[in-house]
Length: 159
Image 1 (cartoon, helix red, strand yellow):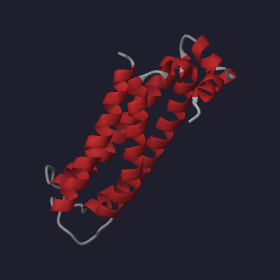
Image 2: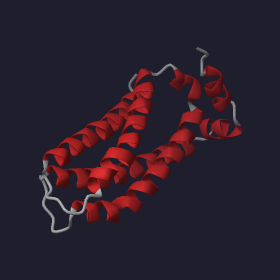
Image 3: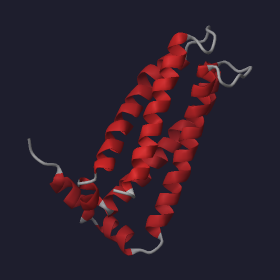
Image 4: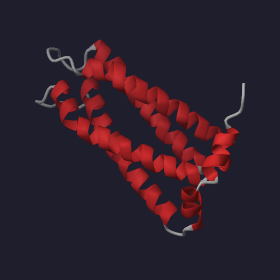
């Protein structure tokens, strides 16, 4: 199996990576936007999941709540991915050997696949009560995956 290190080295050698790394304000600005978008994503996902768990009650069905929050979820996810790629490029060779970064990427991929398949299917069911067995299981897995992404991302700065 060939290493993907050359891709990381290439990313760190791009003009964008050098521009970000050489600036005193671009990296922190990107990181700030990344974190705000992450908070927006987590807020939307957690709100839907807490309703599915039956912890918060609303007169709005979960399917309608998820549909109304979908643009926020999608836009924040796009911003997270774009800023994440830029942040990665500026530290690519360092992140290549980072265990928390690898965990974050795996958890992010799992969270995205789960969110756009199982979570989406469960939340789109119109005629059902919140707090049902599959709702609770789906919400629990969703929360576990997204919180894992956030914790692994936070751990990157420490390891």
